[in-house]
Image (spheres, rainbow, N blue to C red):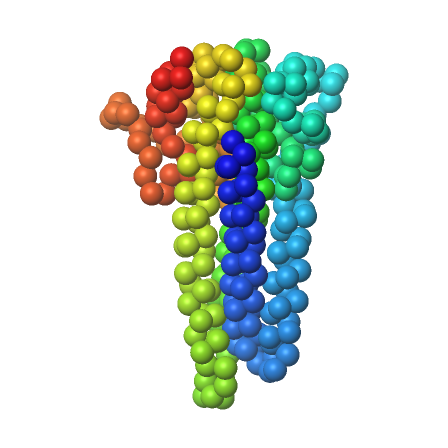
Length: 300
């Protein structure tokens, strides 16, 4: 577990560094398209460093806002509060995560934050209503595993940054549509290499970012499942919870592609009329629930 935590911290630093470089090139390209001249590189650097800083320190607030989450209360969500209190000792966490609730019928949950000291666990009202005590305990333990392993920092930062890059791509396409760059001969005489690199990053960054987001999410779900069992000593609770979450027909109304990888199961339901076992594909945000259940059954 300590090795995974150290690896996640290193990966987070690498991703933030790559993000700064990519955003700098993209903004530089956009500034040249708008004919802002030599100050383009300074604008790009300031913008990229500022956005990276904001993504790191405010990623949890951004994610909670996107999902329209509200703080949980002891009066309304006593069962949730009691489960978290009971798991604090076995999890080894020294700081209690804040609890939030999303008003939605689909049972689901996610954890976010830049570190265990600033962590948040968010659940839907559907999860609270449809799961019994031990099933809910398994889900909360799963999210606490993400917190302890520092998965939350990596997934949250990647989610915000990928969303930001997609937004920049949209901004650039609008700039070109409205004729932001006409004097191409003058632009091509200076800084041509940076312009080309910026254009390539602008086109490919959203694709690579999404693939990174999907891959990071899939490989960490199995680890979080097994770590959750170490906390609860009850694999049946999490297995039953995953079965209920997978079979629930409701759509998560607040779900979006930027944060879907953070949920315990994919919030975008896909019906399977063939009755065959669902498998993960390159574009899957999560490993198949059946594979996760089989892995948990092997731990029993």
